[in-house]
Amino acid sequence: MCRTPAPRTRPHRRSARTAALVALLLLLAGGAATGCGGRATTHHKPGTTHEQAAGGAGTLLDTQDAAGHRLREVPAQGAPQVGLTARPDSEDGWNLQLAVTGFRFTPDSAGGAALTGAGHAHLELDGRKLARVYGPWFHLPATQVPEGTHTLTVRLYADDHTAWAVAGKPVEAAVELTAGPPGQGTHSHPAPAPTGSPATPAPQAAPPAPPADRTVTLAVRGGKVVPATGRTELKRGERLALRVTSDRADTLHVHGYDKELALPAGQEATLVLTADRTGLFEVETHEARLVLTQLLVR
Image 1 (cartoon, one colour):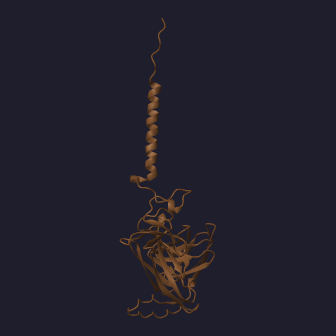
Image 2 (cartoon, rainbow, N blue to C red):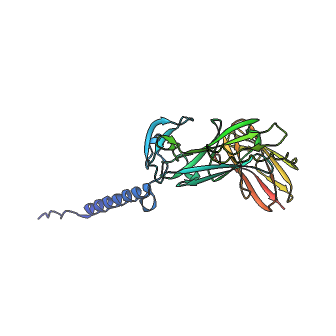
Image 3 (cartoon, rainbow, N blue to C red):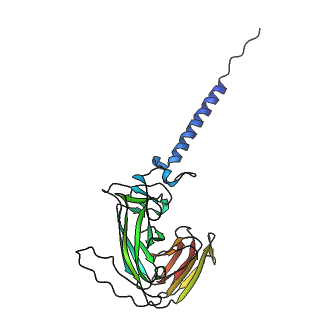
């Protein structure tokens, strides 16, 4: 007598376990896409524009600023604000201070979504862009300011490169700079005082800076440093001139000295500093994130 074998249930159990495992993997993948705690990334997906990035704040307007960036309108209450002060540097050019409220600099998120009160700044001279600024201090060398009186403007931008705006106007500030003839030092004037306010006397011209003790010439080409990154040894108190040429617009930063220098594409720029601090300090670029040299001051 033939007996019909009982149906097997093991394949069904295996299929159920497989389905549960797939569901778990999908759940984990979804959590990884948003990061820890479900936070969305601040960077947009490949193939989408900055304006299409998630996390946009305010209202994107069709109006553009003088540089061609669209304005991002936010209410006046709590909106980002910026003030600009330019002080003649004792060695070269000017030290700029950006006093911001309702705003924080986020260099690591440049190119990401527009988040409230975050981003970077653009520095313009007579409407011509000099550099991006990622912090409250910036050194402007005299070589980048032609002889005469000029208007220096700083404007705040979101990480997606739209300009923060209130009532249809970009959030910005401006001062006047006056540069003397080459080789005769530089001087500056504050912005004109509003009508009815007491005039502020203009500071006297700074004396010509003494020559540098050491000169280091570097170049950035195709994402590489020429000559290759090494160390520059200095004695404390020595004056160093860094001459840098970059094939793309960037910003040079000397760690430990809080010195920055705009690097226009294809033009040589020079930063002069006195090595008055001992230690090992890196000189790098903001955009390309390249270490140009290391200053070893003894």
